[in-house]
Amino acid sequence: SQQGEEDPQALSIQEGENATMNCSYKTSINNLQWYRQNSGRGLVHLILIRSNEREKHSGRLRVTLDTSKKSSSLLITASRAADTASYFCATDLLPNDYKLSFGAGTTVTVRA
Amino acid sequence: DAGVTQSPTHLIKTRGQHVTLRCSPISGHKSVSWYQQVLGQGPQFIFQYYEKEERGRGNFPDRFSARQFPNYSSELNVNALLLGDSALYLCASSLVQGAVYGYTFGSGTRLTVV
Image 1 (cartoon, chains in turn cyan, red):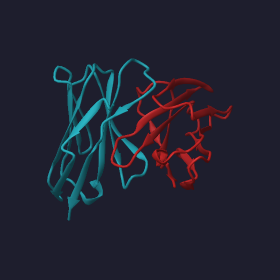
Image 2 (cartoon, chains in turn yellow, red):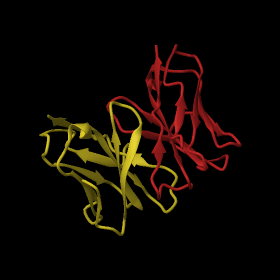
Image 3 (cartoon, chains in turn brown, cyan):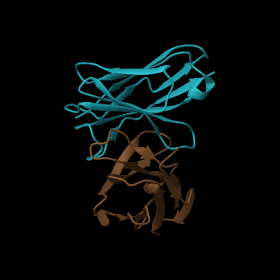
Image 4 (cartoon, chains in turn yellow, purple):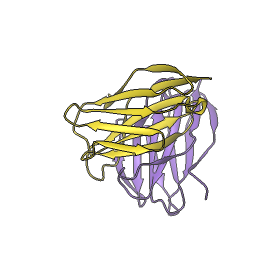
């Protein structure tokens, strides 16, 4: 079973709009990370947020973490066609945990 | 500097055969992890190796095995292939054992079992 679940499963937006996707997880975590995957190829690490952090920014990305609700959100501002991809959240459970538990992902399509 | 490289990129095998997938981590990275991604799902953890020792194993049958070499490259072996083994196999490397800095993934090997 997967630790995280992303919502929505799919998202279609116009170029320039913002895209928001959510991730819920089941057990207490150490870190939560977001990855992007283009066309079923390798995963690209986007951002990591630690369990004691609430918000983090990286360029056009904004990630929030609410440990009381066991949820996280990823916001992509001013989307571009190149943002079309699947986005996955992944959690690790312990300090120096050796594995990531991924959700099923959100597929984002940015229309020109 | 090269990223994580995996070979081959695509592979077609017949049920019952054996397959070996290869991964070269980023130079200086001592940790290699393997993940299986079935179409439409997120990656599932198979193994992690750090400093040439197995440090973690996911919920996969004994048909799956792996090893890490002195140069930190790694092989994933799958015996007695089943149709359900068809998936994208991803290798990830990191500087340290844990996930604290994020992982760098390769482009994967697409395995099709017929």
